[in-house]
Image 1 (cartoon, rainbow, N blue to C red):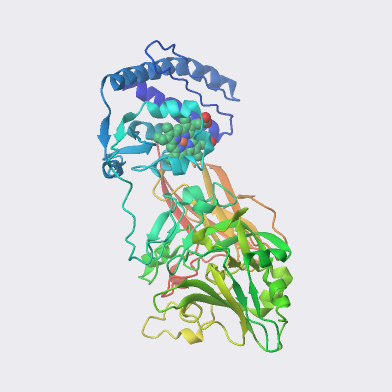
Image 2 (tube, rainbow, N blue to C red):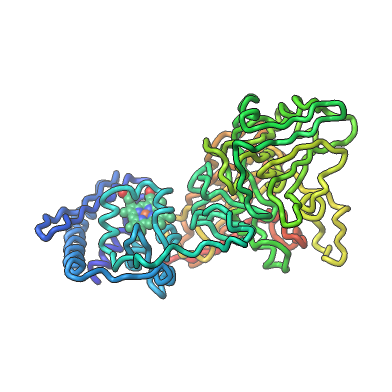
Length: 545
Ligand code: HEM
């Protein structure tokens, strides 16, 4: 127990040191698998040499302890045949109360004691609690090293019962049975149709969101389309040329690449629900992600079909190949002027971060409309047409619109409100998490900021005291092009925790280059569909004395 406590102290020390941007090399070499092992002691290297000396001595003692404990554990394991567990038993161990178990291959580990020692932080490890490590370690290659596997080996408690089959698949009569597998880190808001967001602590780890973590907003089952027989139908103008384009035909158009943030209109709806109930999925702050998209420009394809800017108001309507039992497909539209503007960079995308689109994100082709709400980025695109009116789809006319807080379901008139296109300025805190306990000394606050319509984020203000005083955060990520700031900025603020504070009320708010700012509270922008929540984002944290 004493050893464990000391080990914990050492790892907390490591975390602080890495926060100071010291170089940390975490290296525990345990022993070989036979009984005649030679202990090798842990060694840590920091830029800070005084810390290094102190940790060196303690590390040696502790390393010896860890090695002895590991040796004892291995001896026990060698003597006994492994205990067998089912996946269900493992999944029931996912909290400090039940103990925290994980699997790797067919082996089962009780890592309860390691959670607080994890160099990547307890919250990250907890994402895998009760399930396999592989999908997470695939994202963090740092685990692909022998010393990490050796640490894990110390916590082995048994193996997965070979008779325990993988979780039952969905029934074949289920229209969602053909949906693709998903990353277990995603926080699922609805399984059918599948809607999920990455946990916020993973969201801003990368400027470009890895494809498996990109938030998913589906309205219907995911179609299973054959890329060889896929055709995109582009309706021509009267007397013009209708097109039926294969994937190869689309690839013949000049390939255009652009980094675009996509945000769901319902991002942060869960905060609106706290003011008054709304209809819709309980999105937290993760219904937003960023990818590098590549494909043909919509303006080039429309021009080939003979379309040009019309005098009268016109819209480009998109229809998906996902459909419900009545054959109704997902649909949406954008103004023709935006579609034909080469500077607007609207894409018929067939690549996402250098890969073919994943099925959940519209394989083989989706529309990407930079600066515009995600609902118009129609996936599994089947048909494009130019019409005098907006799309008649439910999702264009009876959804994704904003209303006054006083409008309720008895008084709402969807025809009176314009459909949402460009989204307002937005920002959110992704670290620390609401309710988390942080250490006194210094706090790192991280998050994202983005504005619709290509407006650049010029500033993010952060308050640690509920809005009394503000500090300006540092902006990371790609420089934004004037009027074409399609992608978010990640930001961070490192600041001293005011002495004696037991709690912090952290707030962020962003400003775009039109000097649009976020409203301070949710109530005045509440609406019955729970869309367009861009109020100041707030997290409340506790400080260890
Ligand atoms: C019981 C399971 C786990 C073990 C034994 C483990 C072990 C470790 C070790 C030893 C390191 C330091 C590696 C080095 O710097 O050489 C590390 C770092 C890290 N781990 Fe894990 N890990 C586990 C689970 C996870 C999970 C599930 C995630 C993510 C969801 C994760 C995310 C990270 C991250 C982000 C770092 C890097 C931290 C930094 O660069 O400061 N780990 N882990």
